[in-house]
Image (cartoon, rainbow, N blue to C red; front, side, top):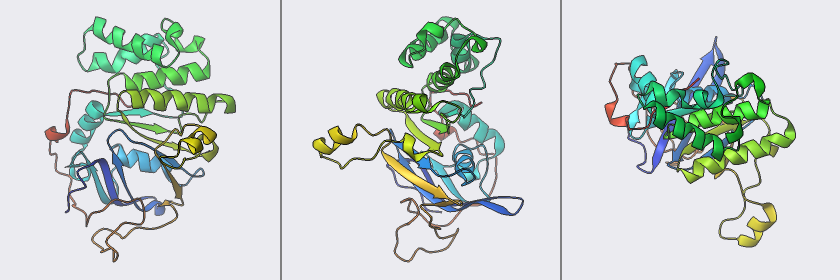
Length: 288
């Protein structure tokens, strides 16, 4: 088992996953650097949700490797994966899934409180994140009194408040109107960049992501506008960019992975309940 590149906070190679014999991921490999924002686009059914679920530890790939900060997630037991998700990852889905009995700030503060933060500190952090996401005036309202776009911003604030190492966002703008989608994505990515939070997000509408501009070309940047993601990847039929990487244990003749840029060899099997303590930090997040 080869360790991933040192500059990748998240690294995967040769991921395969199937549902009842129907392949959802077919040899997906990728690497994500700390602080980077990566978008994965593709039509519905292309495997985007499965990919994020594997990368975030919610699913264990049937074959392949996933590393987070040099910790092999694919060898961790269920308890250790759940601890890693709780402590280091944030999750935003296409539906906010807020607790209806709690106000916006209480929903946002909940993961902090569950991790032992004091009530005053948790409330202060929650209100600050709601303000950053332009829903500070909704802090004392319950979800039922909010617009769909406001509820989604509260969900994003809840995911970002514990300062996760990585935020996974699975089609976070899917239920929104077209005019709201780019605005919510821009708010999410801006907030993440300002706090150096790595983001991996999916969308089935490539038009939501602004075009990538040529580096070191300010004129092109001004013409196209700022890009939301550092890299845009395409997933089609479970294959990143339409290609299949070498399977576990297979050599790649040219020495470079053509399916996402991750470089490594083989797969380590096993599901021992290693505690993965080296991967933990002070951040604590809640995936819902």
